[in-house]
Image (tube, rainbow over all chains, first blue to last red; front, side):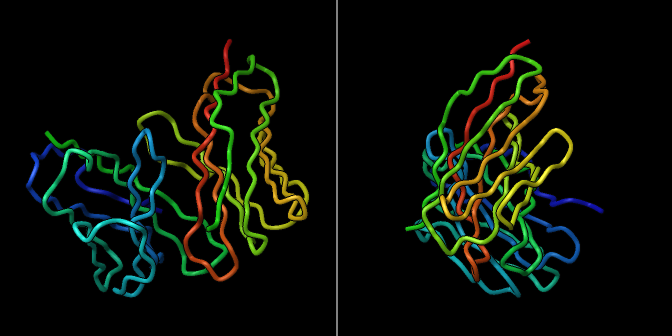
Amino acid sequence: KAGVTQTPRYLIKTRGQQVTLSCSPISGHRSVSWYQQTPGQGLQFLFEYFSETQRNKGNFPGRFSGRQFSNSRSEMNVSTLELGDSALYLCASSRDSDNQPQHFGDGTRLSIL
Amino acid sequence: QKEVEQNSGPLSVPEGAIASLNCTYSDRGSQSFFWYRQYSGKSPELIMSIYSNGDKEDGRFTAQLNKASQYVSLLIRDSQPSDSATYLCAVKSGGSYIPTFGRGTSLIVHP
């Protein structure tokens, strides 16, 4: 069974640009969550999508947005990039149940110059 | 505010010893508990799930849950240098689809 697939694995952008990251969940998983991980802050929850709707949202500015498609694949967009957006962005999928664990993709490492 | 607390470490143990990693949580409504292992530069990997009080064993790993005291722990027996990683504790409340993660404990197993 294929795991969570994230593309691209690495990205280098400059301040002010925008970026789109992609995530394909495990087959049968309809919940997709996004996290930002930095050395100083640990795992920070961005948002969760289910059935093409944002169901939960973390405490990030509106520059961070996402969407989910009918096949459960998800994209995350960051506009007007800032140096502080440099981080590992992780996507996690799970079955839609409150007792199921999340499974993570390999992440996209975003570097802002 | 749901909180999950872990000692950041590093916890250093000799090869072959038992490593004990602890996690406490604030929400008494928590029902699902998970341990993830994260190697440096990699993504978190699920290693254990536990839902009921008591112990759950999987190979060299044992998860222990005590809901009355609001803690969950992970024991790693016969620790190996390859176990050196950061271990994340994650807790889900009943009815919640999003776990709350601790900041992780760094484990170093030295030969």
